[in-house]
Image (cartoon, rainbow, N blue to C red; front, side, top):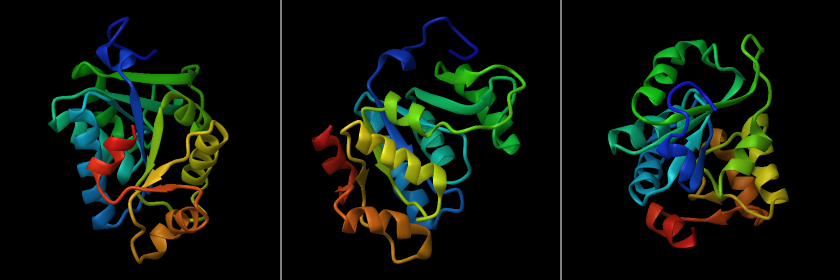
Length: 185
């Protein structure tokens, strides 16, 4: 477990994973905010990396709602990834939330997809490029755990082609809004 208290409230709540486009569309950022806020207000812990775009938007939305998040780092706890999000990393335990890493301090960034899928009861895939390895690996890991990802309708943008492919192949469950996602939890 990361810096902060030995046992944080975030570590004991059901977790939902918001995921993942680092160069997200405005629509994706709006959706990430809406889904993360709804999930957090329903008493679930938002679990995400500190990545640009959807992940960091999910942490910020939950924090604005006064709710806990769980940040999963792909590196040691001694650094933020991406580096520009060091302030976000510091703010998470300061607000009673938690930071988790499987890696020793000084470890360079590595994969977290399997860990994210395992920690979250549900992966909510907001927007993903088809070749976005981390997002698609997390969706695959969730599916392998028999927890198909939930996804809002894919935007008509290349940045959502992975989401569109998963929905078309019925490898993700369509959730048109946060209320439908909460009903499925």
